[in-house]
Amino acid sequence: MDQYLELVRQAKHGSADAFADLYQEVYEDLYRFAVYTLKDPVDAQDVVSETVTDAFASIRRLRKEDAFKGWIFKILSAKCKRKLKEYTNKTVELSGELSEQLTAPGTDADAAEHVQVRMLYQELSSEERMIIAMHIFAGYTGKEIAKQLHMNENTVRSKESRALKKMKEQLK
Image (cartoon, rainbow, N blue to C red):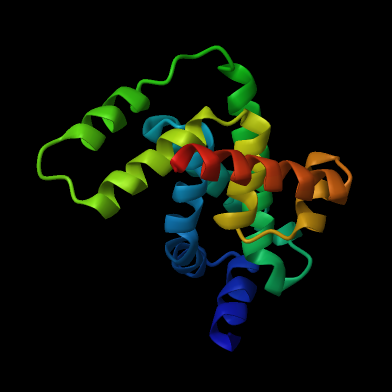
């Protein structure tokens, strides 16, 4: 943990190498969050790229070194939210591919269930997907999600619970 905080300190003082090391540690989580939220791998890559660029440009303003991961996810979350507003009526091309994967010969049960969970996740509203992604992929607490989405903490918990219940019922 001390090495992580030292990397953040170095990045705050302008070290591109330190920032690159930090980026390497969080890239997979950032991308996973973005792709599950946006349902489009290309847009997810774009949003992650924009996030990293903005984070690098403004890391000097990060107040607490131990808040780096939450801070960069907050930037990503805002960019994902903006992107979702851009294409609320966009058709989802990924579900056709997922459907083919689900019915492909030789697909084992775990892989089929994983694909089915992803399809059910995509059927949720953008708000439900955002709440679940922020909690599961980014590790935000209900209180942190509520603050970022400008909601009551109990509302966030209720929406997440209902969304997960809906997915579970459809999975059976």
